[in-house]
Length: 630
Image 1: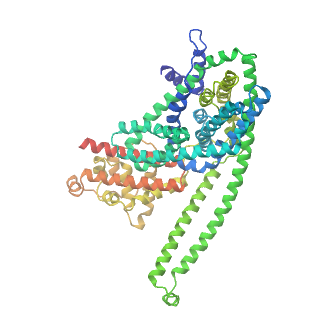
Image 2: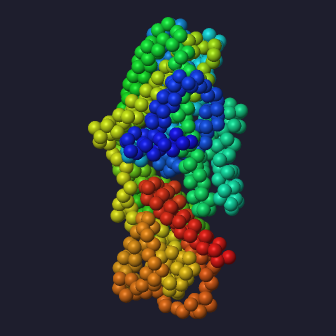
Image 3: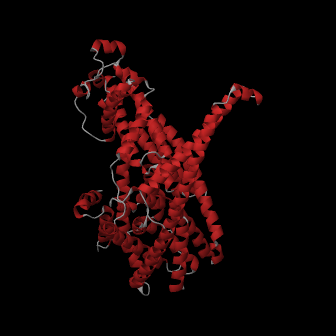
């Protein structure tokens, strides 16, 4: 633990990612004369450590962005793994005939997938959120493909039957493994979220959340699916549903504890990877050619994997660009069809009674038919609006050659590669050589690619992440949140009391302003409401220091203030608990509106996360103040 803390402290000072420092520290400790060979049971990493890490990564991933990148993730997670594994198998079988094709493919299955944990190195580089989403999504799902392919290759190797590597059969096995895992993961995620909604104690909720990845992964493995993918799917379900179901206090407490556990597990993986190196290298040194030959093969195979990755990603990006252009044409054509449909609906609404009578239709039947088509039109317009939002996202965060080069270089092998390699059967020919190649490629990728990635980013200048929110997006966000409050009781309640009393009841300046703004119906006051709304949005989207209580009761820009009631008059109208309950109702209404906007893809994930986090802060403050009063 102290080593982890020390590496986290040193990393920003030396400008090197902490996983790389931990790997080097592990190597240094492992090669000390006083330290013997260290071997960690691979199933401990694959079945105990990785499920919670992948679950945590899936929970943190915005489901809206993952949906948008599903095609890219699927291409990287399945076909690229197959192509890379068979290419490695053919090459090593050609270079080392003693290693048959099935065992070569087994090594290729180990080397092909990228490591979702290693993506943390790319995250710190500041590249665009879309690049990170693609890399994380690839790392979350390619493990299933590689492990199924590894199992099939080992079976073929033990049976000495190369025909067992039939691509059709392998694809079928991968599909079955993914299907079983997806089904179990979805059930665990849905049931788990509903159960967590019933748990009021944050500590108990967090403990239950720690068990969810194992509740998903263990049954999936026993039923022939991928336990890792089951944990990932459960995490994605939690990511999508938690804001609407789980209380803000429980989510915040759980998030903080998961961050701590993730740090420990991630750091432990890289440290353990370095510690195991000596035992693997020592065993290989006994063979003819020894480490030099293993290093030669590692360079050849590592270069082959990267070249294939570069070619595949170049083709994938060209296909994605073609697909985006096709979707743009479909979107524009659908917009035109919806406009024609709306015109026809408008004409249909003006049909007179004589025409209805001539067609033997009653006005009620006609109105019911119109309502049915209005609902269809609304659903159709909503789907097309989502398509338009996706196209805007692709335009704002492009994946061109610059971004593609980062995706190629940031796809590192890591601890999963070494852990999977150690599951290769002891009956495999030259097993120690296979393990050493896996170690050299995984460690070399982390060190070489991890250290050179910042330089590559400075060289190619891809789209970088930005935390800024455009004024247009701010205005749209304000409109959605303000509209959600119009029908709440808080809008009227706050308009009748002064800000000082609301603050004493635990209602923040943000909610006071919102309630006062949306409850004004005088059109002449629209300019004043707009200025007030701008201040509201600033409060919601930025983490500013709250002003003192007196500032909430000050007049606004044009001398308009809230109704100045005495404390006794306010207490006769609303108790402090009532005001807090009204405020909580307003927060829930705003959160529901934001989640619906998320599902429709209206806002960027950064804007939504900022607004939702601000609402969580409001809810936690209100609930905690209620507890103090009681």
